[in-house]
Image 1 (tube, rainbow over the protein chains, first blue to last red):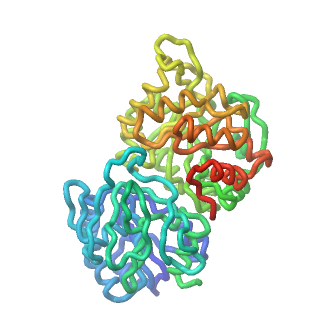
Image 2: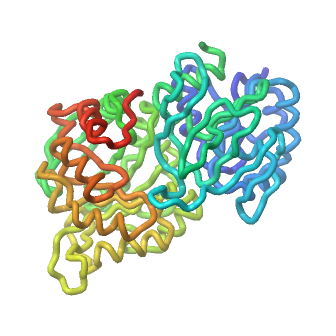
Image 3: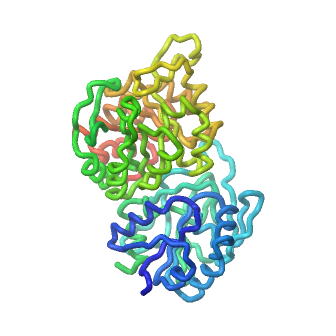
Length: 200
Length: 247
């Protein structure tokens, strides 16, 4: 039997909050790094907090790189969160330069040093775009990040920090991903997760 | 929080019972709080571990960032709190005793997870050039450490945030400890949070505009029902401070 929702565990941060948020929606989200279980799942959530290079190294050592590409190619609903979004792009400046999964076109860059804008950005910020039903344009979500994905053809939500307009949310077919943490963004964050699990 | 109940005292003493932490957490999460901070304030003084069951129950009930402190005595304690669902762990007495824990925590969980909490008090101790001395174990011991020097050192060690719980201002509702908050905000490159003394919205406006704090903690003024978070935020908006007003 396949799981309705799996959370990919690749030793990149704590998954408790994401799991609890799905529980609040009545979804038992299974935390796993088992390739077979991820391939079999109906929906795949790819969270992550931490550094891009170690995330990529962990994906390689767990044999998950191709698994992620395959579930995306198979058209399964796929949700990337924070580092899990960044890793979907082509390349990051982090750790002297890291090649990423390349599922989405574009680069991940470090915020410039701007007086008054501390890096990492930690806190609530506005996202302009159409993210999910019941989420007004300009709603605020919770961010924790030092790097950002450049705006690109699949950007659907834009946020500004340190003088940069960056990708806060991206959608390409079955792939949806957010730089912010919907699991920590109150009722509106929960609405984003609800749309992903098809409980609109 | 003491013994599974939310409490509020004055200058770290005479804590009175205010209610059930999970119920209050949900009320504030739904009511527009941007983050919930949970301190097990007597854990360290009583040399007992933090109430993990309570941390997990609060984490399950709310959907906003959640910081936890009090009674953290090891990297394993930090991990337990994080696995229970907290985003941030605040170390205070432990970091004074063993500053290396800050770097260990930052390496294991990321700097954004590791908050240095400090309980400074006005002091004429000559070793404290800023005029503020760090106390530990819930204002039961003086350390001789200067508050601003300690903040800088903690950030060098990897702390991702500093929370300044002023002992002098705590529970007075007379406003935050603005001079110290400003000195630290200007000395470090990580978010600085003002705590202790909030009694009315103008105190928060002062914390942001005068002391350059990145965030401010309110407790008694909302626990008693005298103010709601929405009312406080309306005044922040009116003062031109960027504020999340829809949730």
